[in-house]
Amino acid sequence: MNMNVKQVDIIIVGAGFAGLYALYKLRLLSQHILVIESGANLGGSWYWNCYPGARCDIESIDYSYSFSKEIEQEWSWTERFASQTEILDYLNFVAEKLDLRKNIIFNTKVVSAAYNEETKRWEVGLDNDQFLTAGFCVMATGCLSSSHIPELPGSTLFKGDIYHTATWPHETISFAEKRVGVIGTGSSGVQIIPEIAQDAAQLYVFQRTPAYTIPVNNETLSSDYISWVKKNYPEIRQKAKQHFFACGLDNDDLSMEDFLPADRISELERRWQTGGVVAFFSAFNDILINNETNKFVSDFLAQKLKEIVHDPDIVEKLTPRSYPFGTKRACNAIDYWTTFNKKNVSLVDIRKAPIKAITETGLLTADGKTYELDTIVFATGFDAFTGALRQIKIKGRNNTLLENKWKAGPRTYLGLMTSEMPNMFIITGPGSPSVLSMMIAAIEQHVDLIYDFIHYMQLNGITTVEPKEDAEKAWMEHTNAIAEGTLFMQAESSWYLGSNIAGKARTFYPYAGGMPAYRKICDDVVRDNFNGFLFS
Ligand code: FAD
Ligand code: N01
Image (cartoon, rainbow, N blue to C red; front, side, top):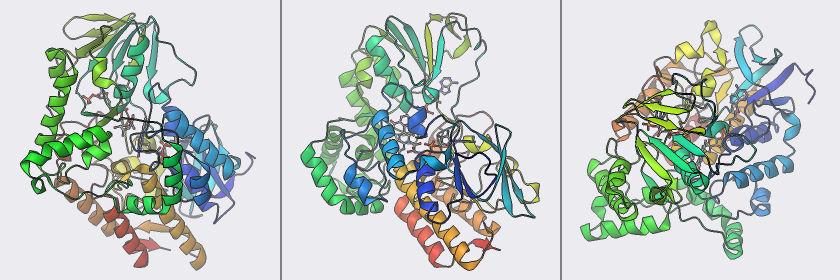
């Protein structure tokens, strides 16, 4: 790429699913467009999170772009739930087919973005000290792209290897004959723990809060099934559009009460056999709003756990009790619970005795015990939704810093834009369904919306757009009211609430009203001449 280009029409930050589709779609409006990506290659989440066991928790057929019939026909998924490597191969195939790489600059981080009120352009600073200017800035920086490592005394002392699941090395790491400690039992921990347990001499799992996990029952997809899918993509996508999470499942719309008491367990059992969080979640439509239904589902899972894990003490430790099912993300699991029946695996309860320090040779817990380790793996998650944006110094009109504006919690209109930041779009921003949907559907919907804005502005000779403050205020009230009507707020701590990060505002970050409702709201806004937005 010619680095002398200093002025472009559109800058896109990030080359994951969002940045790549934004590049393809917005290139239809302008050829002067650049993607800046801090990683050495494209793929976003699927480039960075290359830890053993990394896999999608949405079925492959759903977790794919829907915008290109050719891509749908030319690409064939091999597994029901795709591995990280297969998803990364898919994204490389897409990039190759659409000739996307020529507009991407890798190994370069955007560190600042300041809106110049005179030129009405964004001045974007890079970590190589170069500056670019652009009429539009599209933040495709990801909801789960800013990894979080808890601050522990002594972290520089450790003589062994330290990894985080979200910045995993791209070469193979061997755990054979190693004593390994994994900190964290969210989705990443649940996936990597069984993999490490296969080889490690000893694996210590440091668990603060147990996760609700559902087996995935992954399988190889037959060629007959793939042929059927390729013939039926339009119907599959149409079904997904109507589904709360934007997945091509039947939109089961029954509450627990709608089932006879005797049929409730068999419905859960059927879902358990089907496998996967989304299928299980969709059993009853009131799981996330009715405590009684939620308790029924949690009890079902607790019973399953007792049948699978042999040691009652470990069963007790692995049973979630401090939050309702689904209010922290439930995890797809392959051989997770059975891993705790292995002799080389120990479960350490760090709620009772938190990790006090990292030492030269391992971890020290508050009860005075030391754990001798060769390798420490942090599976401690992300500063979600706003973490990547917070790393960029974003300054809008009137010298407003985004960081200050969002101190008490993010304020957006539709999760797409925030006032005082003209022409800055956020893909799957806080206040949009984002992680509470199959994210590629959310990404495609946002990018298509951004295309509509820029196209409309080009046709009408308009230079800037930003949300009106009252529209933004009303949207935040609406998203908060929806969240308050759910059980999500009962989680003592979760990244959905920002409470996994010290000092971060506690609020519910995504829009919990579902993709169909959200899509309709956005369609209505566009139809009503972009109601709630100010053009100049
Ligand atoms: P990302 O893929 O996060 O890409 C953002 C990119 O922006 C990154 O490459 C990052 O390096 C770059 N970037 C950020 N800031 C800067 C900067 N300042 N300068 C330059 N570059 C920058 N979602 C699902 O729907 N289903 C799943 O099963 C699922 N599984 C997941 C598994 C894992 C392990 C993780 C981490 C996430 C998973 N997700 C899943 C969520 C996933 O993040 C989204 O599905 C999707 O990949 C997001 O794409 P994106 O392009 O919006 O963001
Ligand atoms: O992160 P998490 P993740 N001391 O935040 C613990 C997606 N994803 O990377 O719960 C001790 O969920 C923390 O404990 P607690 C998916 O959306 C999907 O696993 O805060 N422990 C928790 O156990 C997912 O939800 C897949 O008490 C500490 C863990 O670390 C999201 O990414 C796979 C600690 C963090 O769990 C994030 O998942 C992977 C501390 N100081 C990721 N700080 C799929 O399956 C944190 N923890 C598709």
